[in-house]
Length: 248
Image (cartoon, rainbow, N blue to C red; front, side, top):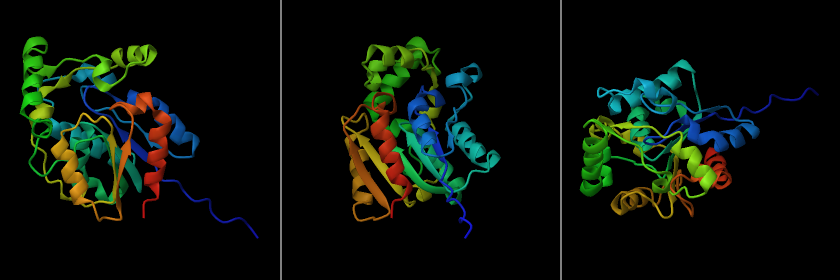
């Protein structure tokens, strides 16, 4: 008898966090492709290799549209969407328009905002004020300059040099803009990965745990690795992302 059709592996869309770019997923993307998955690693406007587009007009809505456009123009279906850090703000806003194309959503040490919250709300007033101060001191009042790789938990000299040579400035507006409706992000099958120690606010983590405590389609995982675990522990991250493919 002829062999049946080869099962199609769902694609991955890996979304970076603030001041990063698609480059940060290099090792994880390679590992996922070796497992037979198509992998997209988009870079948001004004960051990474698109840093030449940096402008004060770039806001959260710009980045939400970036992600939506990737799904639409690449005709992505049945995807595992992975959002890291600030990328959770973007993915949460985009889910209102792309949820039907997403098999699972993974918040990888990422912000999961309620409707109308901003990144500043998520990190709390102290860090929000620090971002404003950084913009005023070294970003012409409208962008946040880069930080050393150690801020993201990257201490290996070679990895740190790589991260420091690739991180770029972040428009302050993207952190201050409120996100739109996020109901679909909160109610979609998926996974939350908390890196320990996490850079996220404790109350933000607790409400995710509480919301999904009895949800069989949403798993909460703890990864003992740095915030930039896709750089420092790519094997462990890849393993969790493959697990997310088949959450039941």
